[in-house]
Image (cartoon, rainbow, N blue to C red; front, side):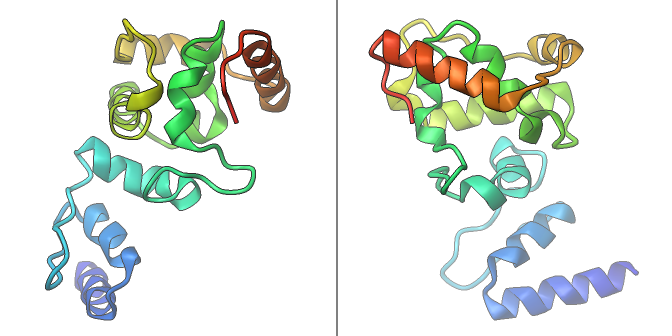
Length: 160
C-alpha cells in the first residue's frame, strides 16, 4: 500500500502537479522538483495551510467568489466578535486539526497574508483560545458574517 502511494507521488512529481506537494506533505516528506522550492512537511503551519485551506482560499490566500480573501482577516480583529468568527467558521473547526494546529495555522495566515490589516496590539491565538471556541460552535455562519459586515460598515472598516 505504501509503495503504491509513493508511486502515485512520484508520478505526480513528474507531472509537475501541485497535487504532488499535497501527497508529499501527507507522507511528511518534501517534493523536490527541478527549479521548484521544497515543500514543508505537515508539521509546519504553512504545510497545514496548503493541505487544509488552499483548496478553497488558494495558495496565495486570495480566495475566490464566495471564499474570503485571507489578506483581509486582520480587519475582522477590529470588530466585536470578529476574532472568534475567524476560528469558528466551519472550514476551520471541521479541518480535523488540533487546537494547537489551528492556532498555528491562523497565526501563520495572519502573519503571512494579513499583516497589512492587523490592528495594533494584535495578540496571537493559542490552543486554549481555540479550545474555548470549540465549546460554542458557530451555528449560523451567514448571519454572523452579515452582522460583522454591518458592524464594519458602521465603523468604516474596509471588509469584503
